[in-house]
Amino acid sequence: ERGKMEIRINKVSAEVATIFFNEALSFIPCFKYSEGEDIIIFTSRNIHYLVDKGGQFCTDYYGMKHELIECIKSEEVFVDLNDDVQFRKEKLSDLLTESKVVVYFPDYLLLVSSRQQLINLLDYALYIRNIGFFILVLFFLRRTSIHLEYIERKEKVVLISGPWREAIVYVLNIGQKNPHYDRIFEKQFFDLNQHANLPLRGFIDVLCENFTRYQRFTEDGQYQIVPTEKQKQFLERIICGEESFHFSEVGTGKTKVIMPLLCQTFLSSNIEAHRYLARGGKQKDTLVILVPEHLVPDARHQVFKHCLNLNFRQEYRVYDDIFALLHPQVHLGANNGESKPKKQIFVVSFNQFKKALTYDKICQKVRPHREHILVIADEVDDFLDRDKLVFNICSNKANTFAPTTLELYFETSCAAYHRKECPRELFQSSPNPAYWIDLYEKFDAIYNEIQDASKSLNKSFGIFN
Image 1 (cartoon, one colour):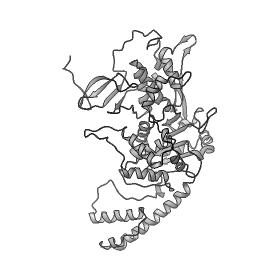
Image 2 (image 1 turned 90 degrees about the vertical axis):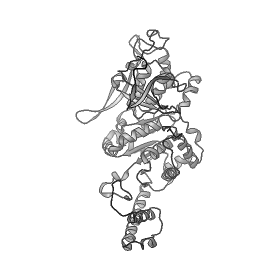
Image 3 (image 1 turned 60 degrees about the vertical axis):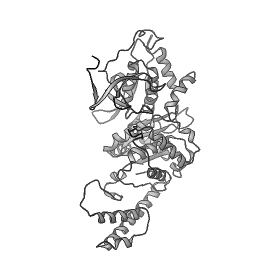
Image 4 (image 1 turned 30 degrees about the horizontal axis):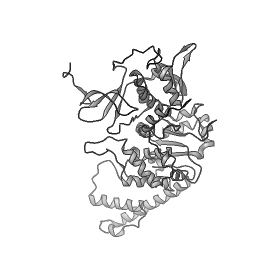
């Protein structure tokens, strides 16, 4: 009964709503926080909505004789009992789970953290008979899929018809153009290609301004994450620097800020940025994101969240499994009939990447195309094991060092990192000046060794940290 039921999500009061976000995301049943403006979309077959199905068997209405989610198949990667990678066509209806997607006020961008969420949202759009929502989700799902197959008919029985068929044809960009739909859906994508001729620093400012719109809007009227000037400079140094290894302190936002911005830079057509990313070699059209095993879920989350709504109608792919390269329809470089290569991003752990390169099929694709591949490694010191080359500047663990000792350690490491002279005068205040001078010389030697190896490595590969 009205007034006697209270809904709470993670102990926060919420209410049921049907909201018009924009022309693409319109009239979607969802939950809204009672004391905020953010929206939660739950996708579950256990939540039932009263949907008008009066035209279920009329092909001119929103319904069809068959549920469309059962007429779309996807090529899925799985590992069999022999630890071999295999592919299997699965109906999307067999892949459904439950998920939660938060849509942030005031921009109301559809942001997902996994491909599974997109499959669930596609089924949800079909269930509530919302074609606009279905089209937008299908745009995103295609960018994360190896191959989607639409079963239009089975023998003499038509399975996909009416406006749903028109929606799929529109997303696939087949047949007549639809300027009305284009005007609606292109607003849901950031057009980075319009900044192709912008100077790199100006382009980074544009990326960072767009980046804030992916974040939650806080109560004090600010976006939760706003890239700082220091982060902008670090991003510019990574893109332009001759070195392959770049070091930063803990908590500087490498995974949550720098890496997504690097991926967006790669997917753009900014001339100056791609001239630097080429590293003196050929243009890069394949990006491999290497992270330690424990950071793979977070890295996938950031890449999916920030890289699916870019450049309306541009064909590119974001894969969460490097073994997609084993599929015959996944190519590196331009495929037959393509005028230019399709950009692709792979998010993978270091161990999985090493395993993938033991497959002859993958090597046959990677080796001829290796000069067009850019590799970005986050937390690169985790990959180097006993041959680590890293400044251990700070630690997350508590320590009992005196503040004066920590200050001297900080000044010593900063002087070596920023290529400044040894601060001998500062060391005179310590009980053991010779120790700090010796430490500075060791840091300096390590830095020179790293940068020398880095520059030679960078001629063929770009590896960042």
